[in-house]
Amino acid sequence: MLAAADGGFDFRGVRGGRYRASAVLGRARRGQKRQEYHLGVIDVAGDRTDLVLRPSATGTVEGEVRLSSGQMPAWLNIVFTSNDGLGTRGARATAANPSFQAAGLVPGSYQVQAHASALYVKDVLRNGRSVPKGELAVSTGDNRVEIVLAGDHGRVFGTIREPGTGYPLPLARVALKGESGLRSQQVDQLGAFLFDKVIPGEYQICAWSDIRAETLEDQQSWQEAGCAGKVIPVAPESDVEIDLTAALIEGDQ
Image (cartoon, rainbow, N blue to C red; front, side, top):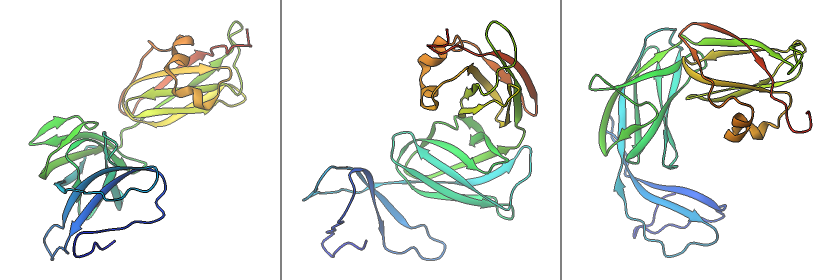
């Protein structure tokens, strides 16, 4: 909304929750960046009146994307997600113009992701040096980086087997967990599973005869199944085949 001449504002009907407040001063002329300021984080649990919000400078991340493997799509979004819960900012790059610019980032630590199904962020370079793509430090002013994308995913597949008999176990649940997140699926009637487009790296993998989906995030479930210390490497463009014995849930024994 447009603030009053005295800087006053009034948002109505705001649902309870946590919000990031920001302000844009004036309109940017052609070739200029808009002036965006961070006003703080507001917790809403009822009416908030007489708030005084003081602006602080934000940062801009700009640069280019390049491919180390794979094919650049017509366009893709590069997304910067704050590790401090201050929201996300996105920037678009295209095959014709690989440059991008994401403005209005509150100084802090950010995760960098590419929203393109066939590509992932392989590396983030600042001044030619690699920086953690999950902890990109953003300061006020301009932050120039180069984002390296790749399409050299691997695959993880195999069979889930029944404890004791070793027979394929239909409809079991298998999960794959690594730096890029957690994926799970129910195996087919022959106990077979396939995870495709797996970003190269190290992963934990585990299977259960039956388990609630929400329990998969619980590290204790992995420890009780004896999977917490088992790591499998997935190399670029590799196929990893593995047979797993499913863990019994309470009541199966």
